[in-house]
Image (cartoon, rainbow, N blue to C red):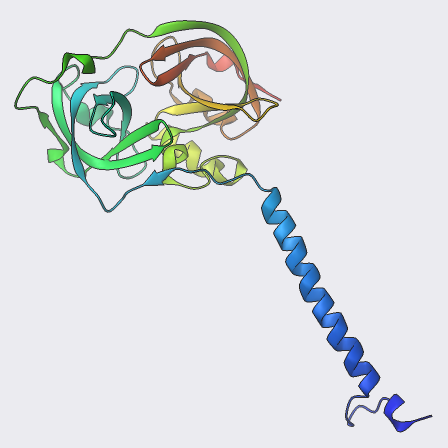
Length: 249
């Protein structure tokens, strides 16, 4: 037997063993990279939402507190848009809205946006809202919701702020604890529905036309099915359901 074919622990590695380990190591690296790429490609996208935390600007429009704090404004993209109002942290602005509902106001905040959905995270401190110095465009008045009919949807209950872009991903089991805390703290809950063709829609959830409390928390981030009435208020879809109608699937 050649000495090159015989392994001795304190001696130099035989050429045959060296070639084997080099090939095996390269194969393992390539295989691991391939598996990692496949797993990453099979995941759902984290979403295209953004939150421009560094930019605060003034948004002028008409504000409402029903069913949730919202602002109708042209200052997002020049079109009449409805934006939900939230705090910089995990809280709603119900108590901070005071007696401004229905008035023309100027709100200072940062924009959270995902495609056609928008939210404004109002600035900290008492000066985040003030009455506008002049009347605003009457087209900014909140429209009466247009009924679209009853529907049964399958999907997921989540918090609107994170899904709009405050966090990525803002849905799924990985976001369950955060979504529960946001909804508990007053951020509007929403229902994200997706059909078999991967068509998706987000609807802000209400109960008897008003805001939801903590009755939804047991179902947040779980696959569920709901039956309720859908209506459209400007660019916002509303889904009116009762907590009893939510069923796990």
